[in-house]
Image (cartoon, rainbow over the protein chains, first blue to last red):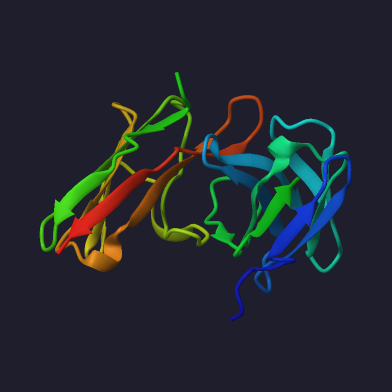
Length: 114
Length: 112
């Protein structure tokens, strides 16, 4: 069974631009969660989508948004990029919704904001 | 107080010895506990999960949970150089909204 895939793997943007990241979950998994990982803050929860609905959201500004499609693929968007948005963005898929379930991570998208 | 706390390390353990990784959490309502391994430059990989008090063994790995003490640990027996990685403890958390909260990780180095 194929794992979680994320595209693109690397991105370089400049301040003020916007970016869209994509995540395809493991086949059959309906929940997709997004995380930001930085050396200083570690892994921080952004949001979770299940059946095209956002179930939960972490403590990030409104510049961070996401959506999920009917095939469970998810995208996240960051608008008006800031230098501090430079991070590894990880998505994780799980069979069911909720944080009690095992989550499997994709390889991540490394975003650099200049 | 952080929601999930881990000693950042580095923790150095001789090859063949037992590595012990510890994690404490603040949400008494947490029900699910996960250990992830993350190699440098890679994404986290799930290695163990535990839901009930006590021990759970899987090969060389043993997860231990004590809900009364809000403490979860991971033991790695017969440590190998390939076990050198950062180990992340994750706890499901209901404060505010339901989410999986990660500790900042313990960097483990196995010395040949």
